[in-house]
Length: 76
Image (cartoon, rainbow, N blue to C red; front, top):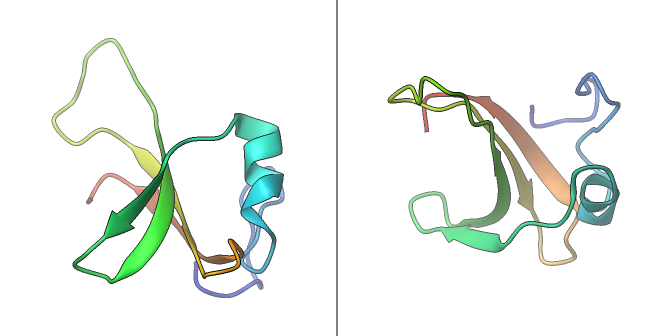
């Protein structure tokens, strides 16, 4: 998602501060994606089967830590 016309099931949208996500799911380490030239926070789901492509939810942020893109999937 790259605009705020859609939201996650819990109501998270592009344009909100990352602090909102951290308040709901805890804070994770901010990382840098050199391929996309963007900073992001990544939440992984862990299951007992440990599939090769583990589901992930990433929140890409701008310099003010405002969410600019939300990614949910396994193709990471």
